[in-house]
Image 1 (spheres, rainbow, N blue to C red):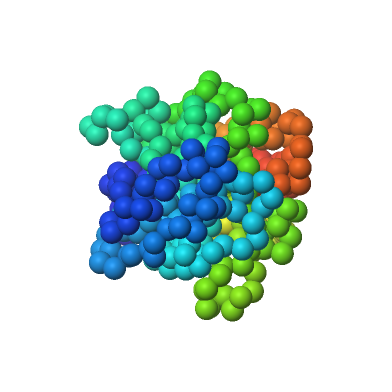
Image 2: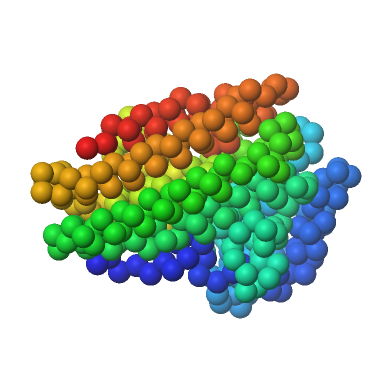
Length: 379
């Protein structure tokens, strides 16, 4: 069995912390961010910050909290006040790069920061579900922004049972235990159905117009961004040598869940520009998530086992195909929302394209390829 323990799936093992050690001024500024953005004072507030103090940081939770604070302030600085900035001041750029190294991801807002490490429970003993969750940090705030992110947090929570079952499915296939493999397929199917139910609730409190005009603009990066064609200069960061850097923006495609299930099922994507993009997204996932997915890819014989035993265990093939079909349905729902929330909106400027996703791709075409590639793996 793979040597990974992920009892809460890809959510952190402990709930995210809500304060940054040693840095009360940074916490106060990120808390005020919605007000500062409305007043047009966010950039001014960043310039007035004291030097970030990470001396004595010991836990992963502390570094992740620092990544949340730096990322929210950084995205707000670049994207939140009129004309986009193409330079980050050293007071923010230097600690952001330093903190990003500690968490193993690029110095930009990505999914693990915005969703996985940016929530708290109202009832600490209650479930990780939207009715019991709030965000720790916001851009402009409001129901639509919170709901958009918290739906993703709940999806990750619903996915935890499937994530735990993936190494067990690999072990069952290697041991030739068809009964156990069928049980693990059932766990994955149930989790995918629960994830779909949560995803289907997105329109309840996240309006497409509000999302497109007030939430999405803060999620872009500085790679494949028409409004920042040259990327971003991180002032004072010696290793970048004063040269502009290009990093993709935050996107749900940086979640590890579907990739991990794909890896267990043996769902592969042909080597083209789309596959290259998927490979690039791995750099934006936490290192343990990347290692988990790569280990599944390297060790899974699930698809081969099911294909070899179609005659003797036809129900196993049905369960395998049900997993693949559920993933395809999840991706179809994602495409529906991409059309509703982005493609069908009225573009007003180059900084919020209806054709290029926050992750820097022609998203409708890429989502279609992802859906089709999944369906091709039915046995």
